[in-house]
Image (cartoon, rainbow, N blue to C red; front, side):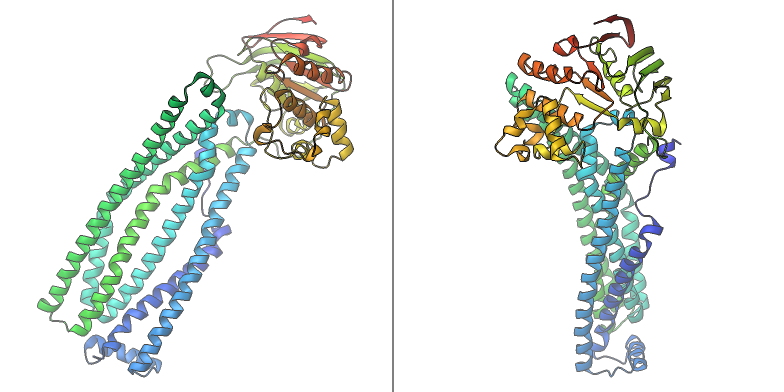
Length: 565
């Protein structure tokens, strides 16, 4: 058993959810009792109190001091129906709160687990599948909980009706109970198949999200190549697979409902015939039993549908619990608080090697490197040389498999590595900006930053354009910063990074997609940082590399002998 499987969480935690579950259960029990009492009241309402069943019920009401008169019984019946309606409403609200608490708690736990996981583990997860799971698939977990709650409610109501039937005619009650049990046992294979269909639906749903995620990220390419039809067909194929899985599920569920209704009617007819023709029971017993059976049959059908629905949605719960278990197993170690090391002398890699799971060769192999404080260092090399892995190591996102990374002699491990990340700022090739205002995007780096600090960071990043906009820093920039040009987005990213007052600034291909004029503006901003912080520039070419005090070339995870810039 893997560590993730051994530590797999549970949806229901008795210590946390037990009291709420007891409340829901109590309301279900009250609802079931009211249903049973309502059925029993049918016997005295018929007025035939001389039969064995009627005599038992008559004695019960007499013991309670309730007079057996039509007016009294009708008033009791109306009061009971009203009370049951209130109980059912309270039960529905309590069940909703219980379901929402479980599902929202699971979603928050999954999100916390992902946020707290090691960067390597996050890199191995497919983004579209994870988004699908955290969104619509976790809503299916809510459906799973709802189906189970409805099944429990239906079972409790059936039990109440069964007790009422037992009070009226034990023989007929036994026949109805055996018939219901046989139905539930007969549908065991269908419930297992529902789980398989639920798994297929989940995979198809993730496929739709994956297709949308890829296509939305490639819209420029799709339109540029004139391949809109292919993108449309690709989504249609994925949606078609999802709908086929849904249709198969609906067909199976429909077959089950047909068999239950037709078979239930036949069994009821058989029991009525036996009661009248063979067992010679009176109408005072048979008619209430028919009413009970007529009420129980749709309840039994609903119970079966609830069990099928729970089996169909169970794979979503399993997927969510597995995701949480994997993420929590990959949780970053070291809970203790640590002080971030101060970079005054050198940032050093000592015989560092990194190999990602499933990779055919190491990303970095026995790398020795020394980066002086407050200088500008360029890291160059072809794609796949290990440049981004080196950036992740320097920034404290990952730990090496062998060797160590130190800041002025302090090893970047555990809590120290996490603390070091607070002293690092990172600007990547693809800008990460939120659909909010300029100010809100900047404040992600330093929520308490004053207006003066915001203005200073923008000036240092050659992003003074932001202050000249009609709405200033309150200007909305659209989804992903689409209201800005490419160069403006990168300079805004740089300003946000500078707000952290970092000891280390990492620029990972930050200007590779910019035109010469925009790149020159970013380079001017970086040149002004010389002596204030350590800057690592990762790229292939361009004005930023010309600023470097030292150039480091990587090839196939190894360092080509260093040369002075």
